[in-house]
Image (cartoon, rainbow over all chains, first blue to last red; front, side, top):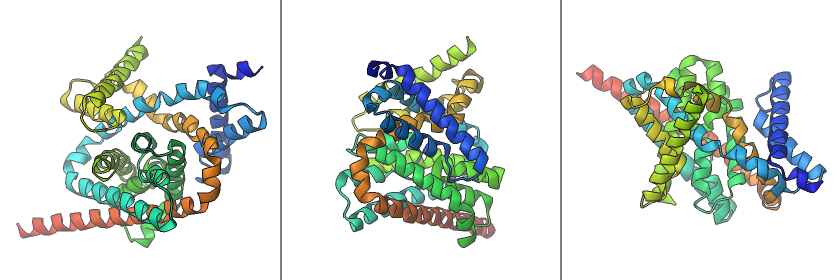
Length: 226
Length: 121
């Protein structure tokens, strides 16, 4: 029986099922906090623990799904290319905002990790947590971070960002839609972008743009800082 | 066949990214190189959006699903998380607010400077 769970089909089917359940739950409740990915991860882990299925068996299928991360990251280029007109017109504020945002993220995470006395591996896992997951794990992995911790931190940050975005816009009195979009994208990447799209088209486009640019800026910064 | 070609194009770009990563003297993630490469190809007209549209829509629309296995491997790290989850949540929240503020304020300041220069001219 146990070798049947080691079939790649099992891992893929289980992942799709749990993700689908997550999508349904979010539709039902309408809560941003019920992020489909978050629910999917929790459900999959629950099934594996409940039926005592070894992680290695699950990962036969899981690793095939993970293989699509790299092409998906590359396709962010298509999303950026779609906004090339806005990018050309406002390249300076966009570049400045994303650079300052990425730098603030890395610096503040590093300081807080020191403050809490977290070890090196944990710090590296958290450093890229404000950028989109595929880029974040490609920074934390090679530098000795724990990839799953990075995935969870990115996700939690994204969910917090999308929940708090309307509040933050009021708090910092952001009136310009471009500024709001960039700020949302810089702090909470793709999860936040879905919220930004609800706020308006400009907000959504800017937020999407910030994902890609903050990603590249963070990678470049990490070359010098790590 | 159309979709097969699109998969071929995108995977080829990803492979090219990995080749460049291996050749670079410093470590730069292959996926980000592929992203830059794809952007350059689109911007220079070497590749038309029609060559990859359906496949890239599929990948972008389902992006979050592809992270599920990476998140599931968290179960190998339960003991680390048990002792640090409070700190993790605090770090995520505080830095998220800081990044929002820093980005918003710097964009606003840049726009203000640009506006002022325009008025001076």
